[in-house]
Image 1 (cartoon, rainbow, N blue to C red):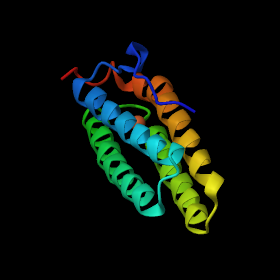
Image 2 (cartoon, rainbow, N blue to C red):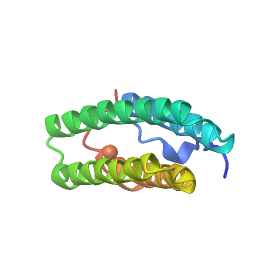
Image 3 (spheres, rainbow, N blue to C red):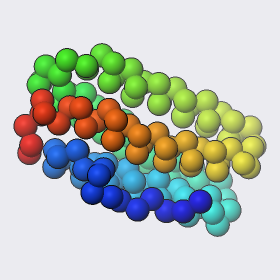
Image 4 (cartoon, helix red, strand yellow):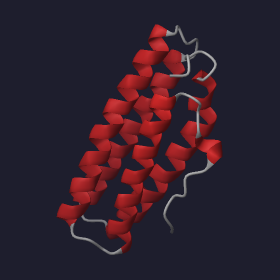
Length: 132
Ligand SMILES: [Fe+2]
């Protein structure tokens, strides 16, 4: 396990969303440090809560922008966001139930999901959204 290093290939070309994606990476990295150092559940909950709140904010802002731009794959994109939220809820239930290794799994899952989503899904909206 390691920290996520931001790469140029992660930029979607919409300044506002690039900034938000970098913030999400920062939060996932904060989570990594707690998982790696076996931090207590209060510390983990705090960062996971911050991550959930920021993700909600970010998904809403993306969805709003795509809607305004009449992005053709909006429904599909919204579904990806909804699936992620559902998956995270399941993880959190497992963490509450006390699984130590679930923390590591969640970290890996979020890391994979975010990078994949940015590169494969978010980049598709770039041509529809005016660079800001
Ligand atoms: Fe997205």
